[in-house]
Image (cartoon, rainbow, N blue to C red; front, side, top):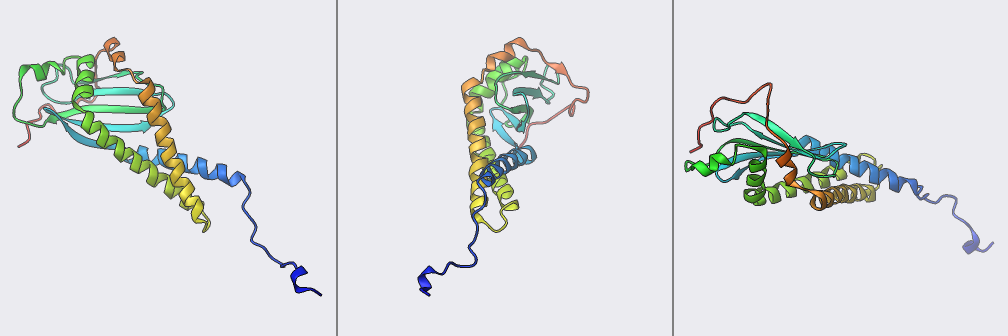
Length: 203
């Protein structure tokens, strides 16, 4: 018998193609879970400190809130600013610098002026926050891929790519549809549980 004609008794079987879909879904879910768990940060937005957070949601919107003693009303406002499935929240939590002028305080008087403040002064903070969310999506997707990898490193890599792709799609949707002018139609609503009554400037 010719040895070349002998077929091996065992060959490693390739995983079915539906596993690709499983990896993509797992990566997307992992990315969204990581953003939900760690998607927050506090940044300086002259002359205030601003806490930013992001949470996956069925309907996209932005919430703005004010928590300092300088706020005319300690409350929040929300507007359907975009179509991406994510909720952003920006909260003025304190004063970042000792220098404060009357025009700074006027920026807190309405959701519209507060939205303008965030848009004009928080560009660097928004960039840093977006990078953080991208890293969370990458890590969450990779973790989900690893959880279903069964020793196949390509699934871990696929989960990471799916997580990053999920973030990119959401980011593109936000960029294409965001309209801060929606806050011109809103007013602050008093919170049931307002924050501390006084926040002193940080040294």
